[in-house]
Length: 326
Image (cartoon, rainbow, N blue to C red):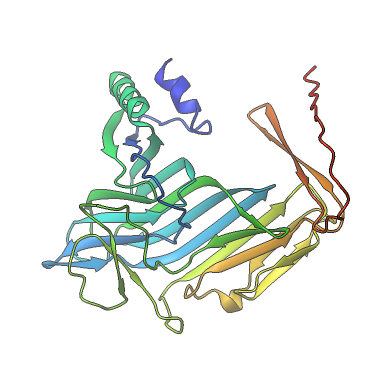
């Protein structure tokens, strides 16, 4: 399989000759690690003998929730305020069950494209990319739920544009699906016996080490704002939509779709955004979601059982599913 064919597995994104390619070997899974939700990310730089945050100017989030799968697109804008070149560490927490489909960092004219693959596959992509003439680096993901990479030689005053896309499944409880996007970087999970953990400290505390993230108290202002839009398409009748954590605008698209937008009056990034939608009720309901990309089509079928079940005896049965692919 050629490098072009392997790269098409990243959602069709191909590195151009003027892009750097980061091939990132996925970290090994840790038993009983549990899930973690995506954070808004942060960038840290060593400057003047201490570790300081690189200013985050804006975060834009777009989520497309189809059935119980969320496709999340995050764009962050930083800038280097210092008078000399810096080396920065970009930290982006991910859900344990996330699959990154695209990562692009733009620093002035410098453009970096990153892909995450299992170790053997990452090695093959790296070797083929170098053989095809791409400027490529082979990197290692440090832990399953935190994406961390160093970026050197960021020039003074440069804008830093980070774009990341990933997929993950949603929690389902008592008829409700829930999607969470933490806008404040809080304490993160570190696998047991981690030799180099990422620590969380209150904002303004002494950094102490090169790898840490800061978190805010509930009433603190973060210094940057967030825009967020989530499109909900469960493929079935939506009973209710809630965004209890923030002031949000809900626009209905029929009875089986909704667009939820964070209100500009509540865009300060000082607490997690929580979106819940109800799909189950007193009847068993089917749900079908279709998707098309690059001329190919997929569908996902689900069945939501009724919330209230009567007490009649259940008889054993066999269920057969017939898919007509003609």
